[in-house]
Length: 356
Image 1 (cartoon, one colour):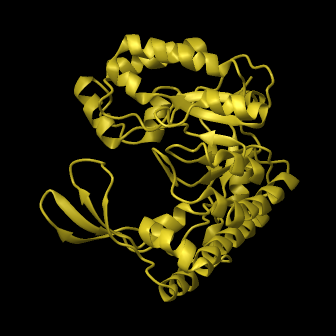
Image 2: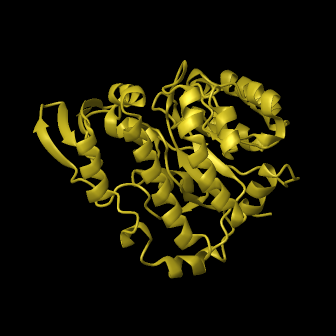
């Protein structure tokens, strides 16, 4: 079997010769730390690192359902060990030069309805030709011969709103200016459908991909009641269109404690949760509640790799039991942090492959 066949079989509860051997990725600092212990100097990104470790992989058609053109990424002020930057989405942030820590957000690009309308009109034209790769026909010829899973990124309903407005303004607007939030969601939905209409008739895809990151360690940043009312129907419109073309696996990337939103995503047709952060979300509990309707990816507690080989062994015993429930592909529950030694990571790969 090839990687594509394994991926489809696992997520359709069918037998495989072995499970796909995927991983999430690495902090930049992780790769730099490992180079002190013999890791190849020329490897500086996730793709190259994962090819070095000989992991399986999946790809996304390189479409764009977010802003175009992007803002210029530029340094506004240099403060020695920190910089004030304008990011590509127009956010002003303060970042550390020495680590990949979460930036400090100083100013968001949308602070009013007028800001949103300007942002939408200038950078969210659904029909921008740049949303579709200019070499799509050439890519399709490659995709037709593929042995790996191929998907397409759809959109984000609330994650992008949180990024563009900030948590505080987004939260207040849900109550004081619902039109703003719904107009943003409707814009994202229309862009996604417009892009999908240009791609789905041309190539058979294996999955869709969505990004949210709207949960923290205690639960969602948006009321599930409101989410059900304004987001779920829009997800459903996109999922229904995907499924007309045979796309049945819909993977959603959200960190944190996702329990309260999982049934809503399932109602919307989103059926695979990723990366299943072990510290906040219990895959066994979700499987008990939703059974074979729910697919999972990730879930291996990265903290156990920091602790050492005994903890890695114990974690993989737990993971193996979750695999037995079906519809689950294990890998780290987020990017591998620099606290994980290269020796421990090699050990993890070896032991994980034994259970795959």
